[in-house]
Amino acid sequence: MSSLVARLRRLVALPPIVLLAAITAACRGNKPAPPPEVPSTSEIDRPRGDGQPTHGGGIGAPAAGEPAATPKTDNIVVELDQKLMVNGNPVRLPWRLEEATHVLGEPERSLALANTLHVFDGKGIVLYEPPKSGAVKTLSFHFQRDNFKFMPQKLFTGTLKVQGVRIDARATIAQLKSEIKARWVPFGSDAALARYGGWSVAVGTADGRVKNVQIEKL
Image (cartoon, rainbow, N blue to C red; front, top):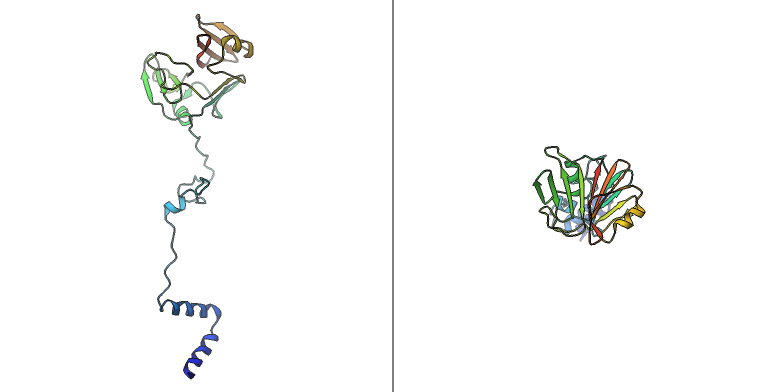
């Protein structure tokens, strides 16, 4: 009994942190505490419930000052006024093919005809590249079906605006002529060409409604 009391007195005299370590070791049968677990890379980068990564700048995070990549999406927004914008990116024609695919993604098909036609089947868009130029001269948006070999499998369902006027399959040439301030030139029996500010907008129709639109730089 006296030896037990002596041992207790010695323990009480220890500093608190040493005493806590001694008690913990005794509870574990004097086995050393296991090393702390380090989360794996997959756990560090695993998204949280809000869809954001859990890391704070580790593996997979962009370097400091590095711009984020332009998101590629099927929801394409094209706006032409004095400048051409595609999904918020300023576009100068000719548009380098590398830049175009950075914004739009890769085309499903490329057809070598008079021009090389890059067909975005899922977006209803065709890009015209003059032979061996590596740059896009014409952007074409398709709102109605056609029998051309290069016709995209799906129609354009994004947003196309010229001078703030939305163009879609419901629009008519008469409506566009009244709302878009440009020099309108007849282009065959079912099309018209709008020219302004160094831009050319060719509008094709079928049954009185817009069928396709092509944008070029004059």
